Image 1 (cartoon, helix red, strand yellow):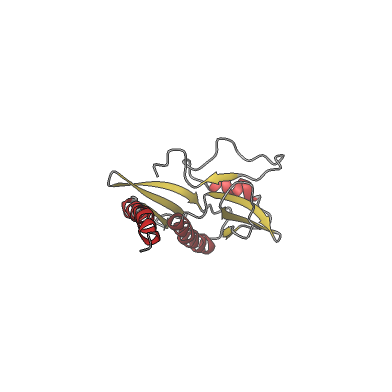
Image 2: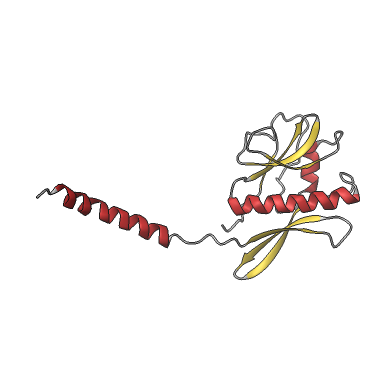
Length: 172
């Protein structure tokens, strides 16, 4: 009789069982974040709805200001941005919004981490601004108060502005 199979069974069975228990017992990350585009007034807004203790709370994330968009493009860009950001929250892939110039166009995109721009392979362009617009300034003005950084972007600053899509008060 060969004792090797019993040794393998004794050593691997507990490890496999533990792995199964951990996989089954990991708490579910049910998505309690909903991103929508609200067009009830003249300025479309991307709204983040977060369920806290069973009660949804709404936070204005982006305000599609008329000075940066026509009425038609504001609604389209708002709806597309809401869908894209919902996918971002569902997959947990991007965590920051940033603004950049990409192929001579001012754009706002979602990126995984600070230090990368909208030209990075993993960046997702959310919308395009007018070429004459300062993208960092536009993004800052469009952001809701819960998502704004403390200081306005400075034209003299060489680095890009990054806005966390999960503010400091984020419960998840």
